[in-house]
Image (cartoon, rainbow, N blue to C red; front, side, top):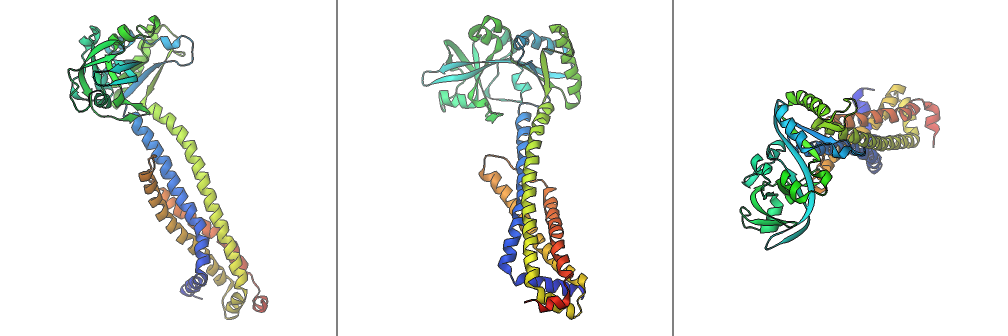
Length: 401
């Protein structure tokens, strides 16, 4: 038999049981779609994490006290931030931060439990967070502890509605502050609502809102913006050397932690990688189930068509022709299911991203990977039934009822 005749016979065999053929391909469809959707969810999660971290600012170096060590949380000071700004080269700005929670009110509104962030004048530069209206306070205003405040975009709307907030008075705790600026809308980044906060001079926060004497000059975090990505290593090394000297600690066991955005992204990617591996196993099991379904149906088909196989062999079909026929049927089922699964997977990933809260991102390699896996499943699980059909004795097959 020629290859064209074998293909024709295989296709006719599939058409005889269209519903059964369709149901057989469902397992492969679901498996292939699962591979694409799950990889898209994993890639989307990684991209969302990277976007959130990069939204904190560009070329950012973050300095925090060592967590979980008694007394270590009190080691990072405002003077450290000043020393970094003065001594470290290749940096565009330094911002020290400390936050408290206070009730906030105006003549028309009162809000409870608002985050008040004490920062320094470089905050907008370091955090890539522009002022939308008015201005940010200056370094001189910070040092003089002037009673000024910059509102987050949402906070300005909550306190003043559609009216301009510039020049208005806001009472934070028991302290009256004058609004000098409103930040641009930024939204929620890494579970922090930037639009719902107040920004005041750090020195003013120490004077008016310091929770204790011990915290009078302490900072929670120092952010440093390097001039470029190439300067990150140099700036990081300078900061480490400076703080080791200032704190008089062992360089191998510092009382502070330096992180870059890439460090945080790499840590998060290690977590999502485990998540991605789990999803890949789930998808692989789906394909395995689909392959078992193909093998099961092909074995049933061989049993049902035993007389047909014997007749074809009696008319001159060789064992390899029979083998090829049933193998083509199995691979065709798998490839059709794979194609439908690719379409369903891409469409499902897009729909999931649009309707769900989780970002999805199609991984280009997942399409040929899933399709190739479907073809491999067809060959692997179709070979045994095809071999069994090819090994039938023509005389026994013709006598089969």
